[in-house]
Structures are given as C-alpha cells and as structure tokens.
Length: 74
Image (cartoon, rainbow, N blue to C red):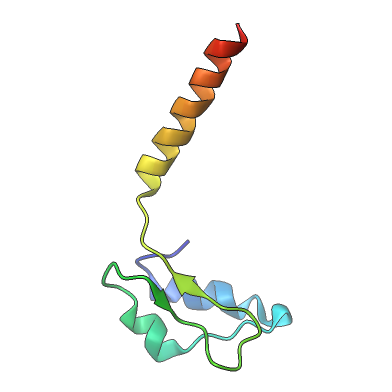
C-alpha cells in the first residue's frame, strides 16, 4: 500500500501508533525509486518496508489460479 506515495505511507503509519509503529520521514520521502527500503525509525517496535510490486500482475496471477481451481472442481 502506498508504494509510490510517501503521504499515504505516513498517514497509514501514523494511525498505527498503538502498535508503536514509527517511520523515519526522511527515509519515507526517499523511498520513491522502486527500491526495497526500510523506512521505520530505529525506535519503532515494528519494521516498515517499502517493497516494489506490480499489483496488476499479482491480481491477474491470483485470478488465473482461482479460475484454474474452479475448472478442476468441475
């Protein structure tokens, strides 16, 4: 979620304060170049990573898997 949007990542992580999630805002801003990058602050109780992915490809693979499993069930 928010792979290309530091504002979304920051907003989501702020709502997870109860889990003691803290991000390093400077690292969060840097994480826009399709690199896997840890953006959690050293004192964060939970690690937060930005991991590049292609949601469209992943969704298509899951849909194909579901369709194939439905064909096998017939």
